[in-house]
Amino acid sequence: MSASPSSAAPEVVPFDARPPIEQAGDETAPPPGAADTPYRLLRPTVAPRREVKPKVWDDHHATLGYPPSHHYVRHFWVAALGSGAVADLIRLAVAADRGRSLPEPTYLNLLISEGLAARDGSDLLARTVIPPLAARHVRNLPPRLRREHTHHRFASR
Image (cartoon, rainbow, N blue to C red; front, side):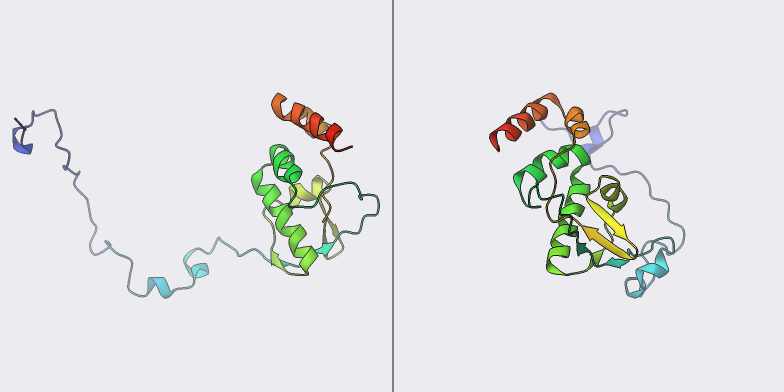
């Protein structure tokens, strides 16, 4: 025997019951033409990121390292810096290698502080060879990743 919505107990709200909606005038939909309005007019606090054209960082001391697409970079650097910063690092390295411009990376300041990117006057330099993790990064890795990193380091010699 199934219960109908009208026979429900007073404290039980029927499944399809909805709270009343208070509407103020005709504000149920955006005004006509709102989709055609440029976004910057709708949100004046949002500014588009400026375009940057990174150059390859020719650091002769940094010959030891990995290409941006290497498993080491995606596995260990992500654990150290976070996926967003590593994604920005990879985009910067690829753009520098191909001579293309891209929107300024969100994590650029972090990449600069870690020595993975640099400013030289008005130029933005990006590493295309990513160095191994520094000892301080390895110390901060979870134990399992620290063991993997140690094994990787000795296996690659």
